[in-house]
Amino acid sequence: MLALVLALTPPVAAAQTADLVSSTAFRVCADPANLPLSGRETPGFENEIAALLADRMDRPLETTWFPMGPGFIRKTLRAGVCDVVIGYAQGDELVQNTNHYYTSVYVLVTRSGDALAKVETLTDPALQGQRIGIVAGTPPASHVAQNGLMALAKPYPLIVDRRILDPAGEMLADLQSGEIDAAILWGPIGGPLVKGNPGLTVTPLLRETDSPRLFYRITMGVRPSDQDWKRELNSLIRRNRVEIEGILTKAGVPLVNDQGTALLEAAP
Image 1 (tube, rainbow, N blue to C red):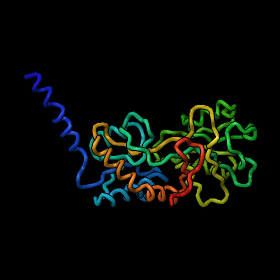
Image 2: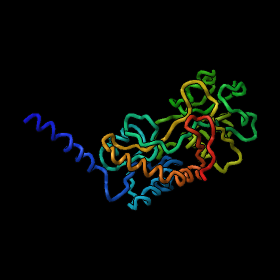
Image 3: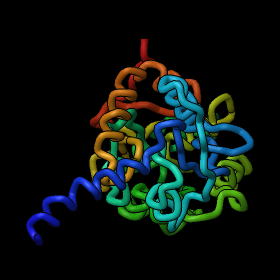
Image 4: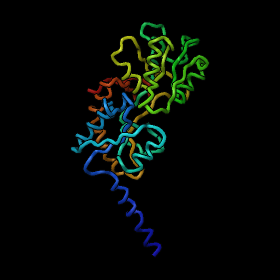
């Protein structure tokens, strides 16, 4: 009897978890105030990608809005109220990753007329004595410390409710006012926010050789049990690569090769 129970248990569990994925809607979890990535009032580029994939699957898009922060995955994806998170860094253990659909890199943002606009690496002596904006706890903060720049750096919080606080927007406002001399932001945030602003220059940090790395491959996140769903999304990503890259490029996201060493040209 025990052998029979053990033999029957895996298929039953698989059927239960498979039922979590909707067959009638493309269900997405997203932050309602995390522009330029996602937004309830004004769609971000991740919302546009979700709409594209829903259209390709001929399903209505259903979005569950929840602030990105502690408990986000547990209360959304793991709770079964949605089936995919559109943007998730490869290797995160909270989700199962699809194949990555783009790679991006941290950027240095400077005032266009400054000498710092020519800086391409955080080891450049020109940064010494300058006040640099940095999001606390992010990988480039380690580079700032290693290069002796932390004493004058201005930190901005990483984990916030973006319906209330806007660290990236505040950092760029401080840069324009002269409160700081340069800003370091994740490329998919800094690139779109600066796009169309001739007063600011965005320089992808492609030449950093020290750890930690500053480029990351971005996937879609699904539940660990949803193997078939992951494969379906992988196929969807592959077939719609050009359109996805077009959305990212139009938004101003700096796209780089998988080694983080060179910018990619726009998809044909």
